[in-house]
Image 1 (tube, helix red, strand yellow):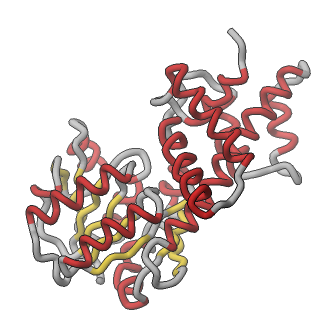
Image 2 (image 1 turned 90 degrees about the vertical axis):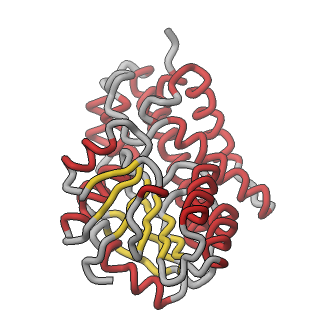
Length: 290
């Protein structure tokens, strides 16, 4: 698949910079997104254009998917199969974080219609999506992974993780366990700094380069020190969803996750307090009293 046309479903906070990098690599990219401003964003990002549903998208060899939830993935697949029941010769790359069960179920529907399915969730967030430095956990037949790698490589490093559908998502579950806990740990630590009458910004600068540093501390920390209206690169609602996927997978595997459960409570508390659409860094507000 060398500079071939493709459809990118979900050109939101992380999907748009991914689609833009693929377009910049020479691919003819059409976005699919129901947001009213999607067409404007697509044009500004160098995409061919954008449509509101996959039914209206051009019939391209490859569809990349970056929707938010398992229900959205299921609805997308239903629309796609209604519009084009025969998916023979087409590649579907599911890059969303939707959990192993959702990918196996919806990937199975696509495969039954003739599609080649690659389970390829990403990690690195908006910051690394913009720079093309995402890590992509790609599960699927080796030939299928190889076929879509030229497009995916524009977004970051493709890491083949085996041929079993859902294994990419399972690795992402482990990844999101750590991310969920690390964000809350960063929020708790910076609130502790303030409670000790220290300057949290100074503390952040001192500790992030040492043994206590983490990507989430350095990435989210500065926004935690801002206000409620900081730029949204990943909403609280996303980590409500993702921590829930981790909890569900852990329960199914009978794996204890007490730290994840405590972190999830913070995301739920943030959402319940009206912060669901705010940046996930605002989980720090669950530690702050009016």
